[in-house]
Amino acid sequence: MNRRNFLITTGAAMAAAAVPPSLLSCSSAPRTVAKTGKLTLTFEPYELQLRHAFNLARYSRTTTPDVQVKLEFDGITGYGEASMPPYLGESVESVTKFLSSLDLAQFNDPFRVEDILAYVDSVADGNRAAKASVDIALHDLLGKIMGQPWYKIWGLDPAKTPVTSFTIGIDTEEVVRQKVEEARPYKLIKVKMGLDKDRETIDIIKEMMPDVPICVDVNQGWDNKEKALEMCHWLQERGCVFVEQPFDKTWIDETAWLTERSPLPIIADEAFQRLPDIVRFKGVYSGINIKLMKSTGLHEAYKMITLARALDMKVMIGCMTETSCAVSAAANLSPLVDFADLDGNLLIANDRFTGMTVVDGKITLRDLPGIGAELL
Ligand code: MG
Image (cartoon, rainbow, N blue to C red; front, side, top):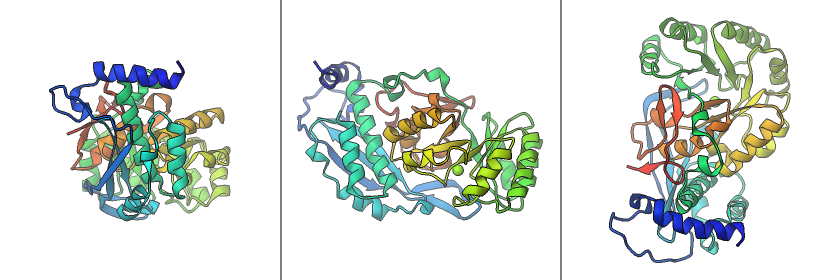
């Protein structure tokens, strides 16, 4: 029996034995599921409502467009999601158009992950969040067929998950103080920077939580390399552990200059999206922030982690504002990374999933088949 047949055979048995009926999208009473042998993709727009206005160096917003995805095979449902912060160029319209163009019914074996995702990737360039939604739903579906969560399928130790940061945006002193109160359970505070109030914001946080390490995300907001280096030293003295995307993503030489001199790791975010981007960043950045909505999902994100490690780069896993569906999916990879910024689900008021949780600041994975998220 080859591996694929083994997984299918074993998976079918495990699904019958181990998957809670609720995950099979059916009532608690056993029922016979019609076997179609086809992958069926459905999707619907779902606007994420943010708890606080999200203020970055370059824009502000109160909602995030999102599309929720279902992928069904023989009565088992995998869930996925595309979240589209406007600066990445995708929209409900573009995601809907892309997903409508897919013909997944041509695949009668959901375990052909390489073939299925290569097909999805080939249909059109870009559309990274749309592609991620299919990848996440496919992983959820396969994990449910096998009756195992992905961190186990990948052989990862759930005890090795990192702490996750809690993000504090650029805001008035009053709002910053309120957000620091919300951040008390966390063991790492991520501060958005890039405007005139950077040092004041850090001073407030260090006054309220003197012992908690911070990291900063400049979102391309700095425009002077000497001042940036001075700021990196100032931040190091205040317990900062890394600086994310200090300059405009096109400032390659300036970033390499800073990375060479900075006492803190310099992490790429907006500057890169997918696997091939990583090789040219060796020496420019100290590490990368992988997000499923950029990487086209878990399959490529896993390869990105492997490549970054081979290049001796640091790895962070982050997210957009997303429901617990995509955030829980990403959390399965977190035992492999140095830093995690998986608070996107906590920033929205209308999460429709439960999934990974943050306990005492640390990512806590759930022993649920698939990506580890359950529809509420
Ligand atoms: Mg960032």
